[in-house]
Length: 439
Image (cartoon, rainbow, N blue to C red; front, side, top):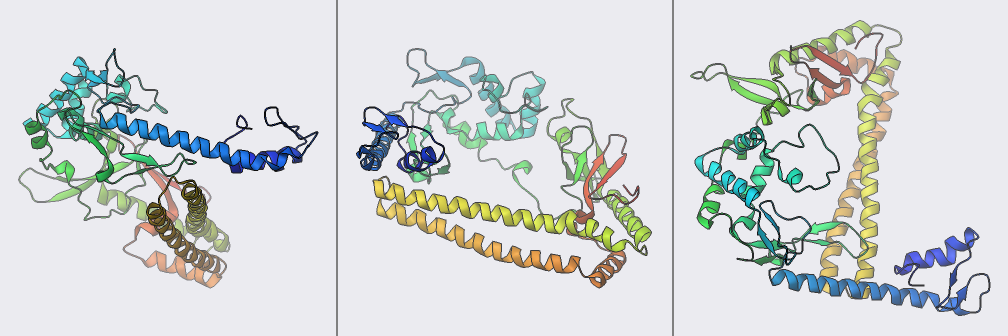
């Protein structure tokens, strides 16, 4: 029986439901059980399944305890070795310095200390042909892209904040939500297992603290402006979303002009992509003029009602609300299962009463929030359906839309799927619909 499974609910489901329904004969030799010749021993099977399940949980506890003791002793038990180190040949639980990667780490810290930004450091390392950590380690990547072999500013920032480089080993930051789940959660810092001077330091404490005290422009996010087309403007060559940069016309001028700039080019500038850009104000004028022209062309046609449903209804509102509704429903199912697993862990002693109550409160709070969200979405979906079948509302909406001087992002997204900018500044607009060559 223990070879079939040690999760008592699933094991019982197979033995007493799935196998009989599919005419499968199940034989457990050591348990003296055969579905073809029942002899009463099946009455004991549920109890054996529970015992097997408890055995599995007990083994899990012991393994976890051993791993935690090893972490506290300064042994490295994680899967991925930090960049700049390698496993010792005589003891795989100890880390030693990887001379080649270590000098790159030291160089990164020195460049940052000199005043270089994370982006500058990343571009320099890529220009020098130095492989980024994931590629250098030989890690099997799930997906490769045009930027896989390039250093990213975020990678540099992560290395600069990694306390491994001052000899501190931090482990046990995450734990599984439950034994039956693969999902992990971040633990509070008070529960992390921190061992100082556990591995060789690559940089001094003073240098580490100094570079992490810097505040550069790249560390500060300015979100004063929510640009009209942001998020739907793409580079036609690399396919990356274009970001908005505010540039001065002249060095001594206070006049700032927002432009859409290829994010890949801005981040790497290593021949991965060329400089695609467009003035934000000019692009707005082009898009809004095109939308107005399409609406004016079809405003008085008899089939406006059908075109409206495609343009303003199914293309955006209903799809957006319905997708959010289904996602919220899925989250509730996940939360319900997590609560069910929580009771099992409490019954088997994995969780204390205090832990059980705390986690359960958080899950129930999340469930109430999703219930409220579903209620709101049901109202929005119902209202959207009502608007779509009301011809007078349709006519009024189009009429009002044509008079609008200041469009908002939601209005634009009802019509436009994406906008592609080529290097020669050619603009290609992709709509959610087709109106007799109106693309």
